[in-house]
Structures are given as C-alpha cells and as structure tokens.
Length: 488
Ligand code: BG6
Image 1 (tube, rainbow, N blue to C red):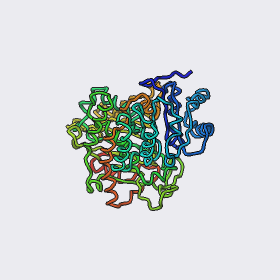
Image 2 (image 1 turned 180 degrees about the horizontal axis):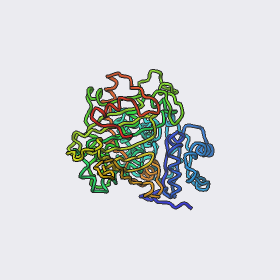
Image 3 (image 1 turned 60 degrees about the vertical axis):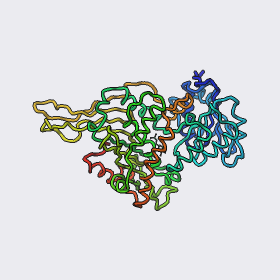
Image 4 (image 1 turned 90 degrees about the horizontal axis):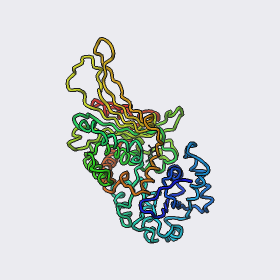
C-alpha cells in the first residue's frame, strides 16, 4: 500500500493535464507523477485527467503512456505493482481545445467539489482559450490552481497578454508559473548556501567579489524541436528565464522569510536593477553563436542549419554569452557573465564567484590568476568547491591553488527528486515560493526584449562555433577584455 499525504485543504484532487499526449507530459510529467505516487506524495484521492485531441479511449491512452513514458523512469524506481496502481489514477478526456464549443466533457469527468489543478502544457497561444472555456464550464473556483508551462510569451507584450487572460479567471495566488530550474535540488541548495550560513554574507558583495559567471551548457542539439526553437533561440529559451533566475538567487538580498512573496519580492528587485542595454552595449557586451557541424559525445553531428526544419538562412542563436550588471550598492561594478548554448562540449551548469585578489602582493612567487573562487556546480553533479591558496610543502614560499571540495553526493544518501516531481508536489501543497510571480516574469522580459530587438537592428549573423566546443571564440574575448576567463 502506497502511503499518502493529504493536500492542505483535504479536498479530493483532480489534476487536469492539457497537452496530455505531448512530449513534456510523456518525458517529464508522467514520470514525475509516478515518482510522487511511489513516495506517497500524492493524496490518495488523486485522479489525473489527461486531455488530448486524439480519438483514444482510456485503454489506448494507458498503452500510449506505457510506451512513451515508462522508459523515463529509472529501473531502480520502477515496479509493476506501483505502475499499475499509478495507471489507475489516469483518465483520458478527448478534447480539442480550439474546436470544442465547450469543455462539457471535462466538466463531466471532473468530480464535483474536487480541488482542480490545471496543468497547461500546450502552446501558450492556447492558454487564453483554455482558461476562458474552463471558466465557462464552471470548472474554476477559489480552490483551483493553474500551472503555466514556459515559454510564457515571446516578449513583454505577449507575456502581458497571457497574464491578463489567465488573471481574468485565476487570482495571482492560484497561478504557478513554472521555471523548472527553481525545482532543481542544487538551485534550492543555493538559497541554503547563501542564507543558511553567515560566513559568506559579509564577503558577498563588491568589492570583495570581482565577477560572477553563470554557465548552463548543454551537450544536446535542438533535436526534434527545431520548429519551435528556430523562432525562439537561446535568449528566450534559456537566458531570459533559467539563467536570470539563477542570477536572482546569487544577487538577491536576504529575504525576511521563506514566504513566497518575501522571496519573490527580493528576486524582483534584482530583475529591476539589471542595467538596460543600449545598442552600443549590445554590440560590445553580447555574443550570439550558432553551432556548425562537429563532434559531440564521440559522434559526428550536423550543424544547426543542417537540422531538420531549420531554414538554411536561419540567424537564430543556439548560444548566447553576455556581460550584465546589477545596479545596486552590493553589486556596483561587478560584471555578471552569463552563457548558455546547445551542442557544447559537455553538459555542465555552474556558477563561479570570483573573489578579489589580496590587495598587496606579499608573496613574490605567487602563481598569478585568481586566488579564491567559489564554484557551485549544479549539474550533472552537484558540488561546491572553494579554491584557496596554500603553501607548497618545502623550504621556499611557493604557493599553489588547492580546492576544498564539499562532496554533497557522499554527504547525503537521500534520493534527489527531479525538478518536476518537486514542483508538482509544491503545486499540490499550495507552495508558491519556487514559481515565478507575474511581475518577475514581466521584468525579465522588459530586460531581455531590447537586447533581442537590438540584435534585429544590428542584423548580424551569429558567430559560428563547432558542435562539441565551448562556443565561439568571441565569447572568450568578452571576458579576456576585463581580465577574466570562463572556468570550464
Ligand atoms: C528547457 C529548454 O526549458 O530547458 C530546453 O526549453 C533545454 O531547450 C532544457 O534543453 C534544459 O533543462 P535541463 O534541466 O536539462 O538543464
């Protein structure tokens, strides 16, 4: 028997997934819900109503889930009995969101008096219709929650439009805007590192910190998502959301509590303090790249322009690096270098905080370079490393950089839940801290939009970089100019 946790208000839970046949539902949502079920984190009353356009009955849908979702659950976590129990929670509701005159079929399938969580995992262009029709069918009440998958708009005006449309039917406290990076164990640990320890805080500012680097490098290419990706690019797909959220956690002031609004107020201040880019700043401080044919993971891979569904003259960036500034007392003159790209040498996400070197060179044989760095590795493995100078044993005063390595893998034996599992549990329990508030999302677009527009005005092609490399040479020059270098 799977133990169960009741939700905060004791109501039966109907989780309705729009886009229930989609890629995200199969790869992430179903495995996450299975894991939540396996660990007793779904209320015993849960039912999952998946909607889709296909003319499936329930059995055909369950077979589809078996075929497309099961393989995303690790063998160690999979067992037939639990899987069968999980499938019993699932229903399929055939629904063509655009064509259906009403959501009567869904209203019939959902239990009266249930707490409804609507997970919108469709194109954002459908969000307005979905919310309007849900309300018209009487499915939205004070207990309902809605989860919005990214991309939340294409720019500020489209984000505002979505927020307005959803806001007509749901209060802000009912809206869960997903940025799955906020569900990562390592990202949540960053909050603990900063605010659960007092030793870092006095140093955590200019001029003690000389620069911050945030890298999210992916080994994969655009794969089958080229159609979506080509009208999106790395800025909208990764930097405007995931990297800015990481920057917020690094740069924010200590919140007064872990209450959702207390945390989000502080993140919002960071987003609003981000210096706006002029056209000259864009030309000097941003680098766009596009991967070309190369070798990745020991295999030859095509360049972006050779990928299926990518126009041969596409100028979409698959890589972006830039130098940002947070204009506050704490971060005055500290550059924040952000970088993300597809088809890079390996999957690696890390935050590197570089501390100022000692003001006076006491040791003549100092090796040069940066004496102290805090490296926070987010994925694929979690680690926190502090680089410090030490004396090489011997009769001289030779120094060398050594690393204090906090090995979190061996410190904690506990299971690490995937981001989607953790965030879905948060939704069920009504915890909003790790979701984006409307004003945060809009502030992020307000900063990103002029950069994207500036690229259009400048009209330059992205710099080429070979698949399997660390990006275009220009991105190294961006840091070298200031006397820094990317830490791989
Ligand atoms: C998604 C992007 O938000 O994040 C994808 O749309 C990207 O393009 C993915 O691959 C990366 O997530 P993760 O968790 O693998 O780092």
